[in-house]
Length: 77
Image 1 (cartoon, rainbow, N blue to C red):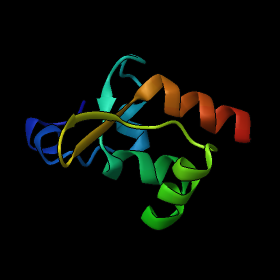
Image 2: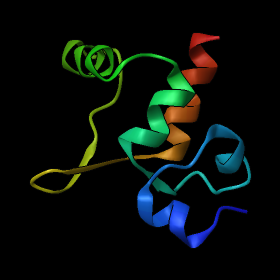
Image 3: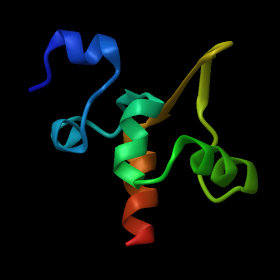
Image 4: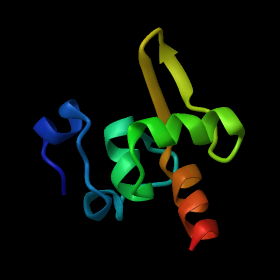
């Protein structure tokens, strides 16, 4: 189970996310290891429609539903 420090730092690994529900909101730092691309490549994928748009929580705060990211990874495999 992730520690409160990891959750606050938004640095959960795919292994730590395995037991979390699909409606969990995850940060860019947690998405990148799951899809194994760079930050720039991820934003290119989002802009081209190959990856879902993030949920904008604040001006510079974006999150994705864990279930959505899992689905994209599953389809790519």
